[in-house]
Length: 244
Image: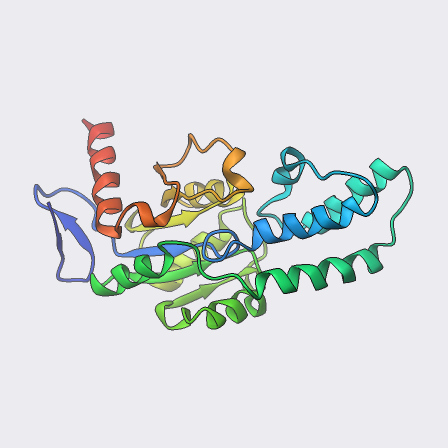
């Protein structure tokens, strides 16, 4: 059984366990499924060349900051000649912007943030995206006030899968890594969270579901599948079993 601790966290009867004091969320693909939108819009582009963009190939680039460069390299290779990257980028941006303007938050995200607020947990954004990009869409979705910390690539020397973004997010929250649960959708994100010492919950989207997430602490099909309290309880039970 868990209960709220005096210093704002969640602990369990029986003692000896580290209280959970914070959660950290990725943005792209977890809060809003911009990753699937990016893939779908690029697929539309390559069809104009009578080509396909296999998801098995695209998924390897998800979560990084060189997806566009790698996708164009792939297209050059398939066509046997360089593409007009500037023109292609303009067309992709137009389609992508149109798609994401219609996107709402992923199922269960708002309730997760509400749960965190209710039980006194601090909340960080931990994203390899730029601050301008993430904040624009978090504000559009009405979620900005839920976040205590916004950690993006703007003030990090390295991005995921390097753990720096998570380490900085935890430091700004004023908690320890083991007191924090990360929520991620991609392979690089989960690797970053685990390398930083956080517990990690993977919630893959349509693009990232092909990855193996055997290294995470919990995998969910949707954040709507469990309340935050249930997630914390499940992680603690897993931790207790591993220690026992």
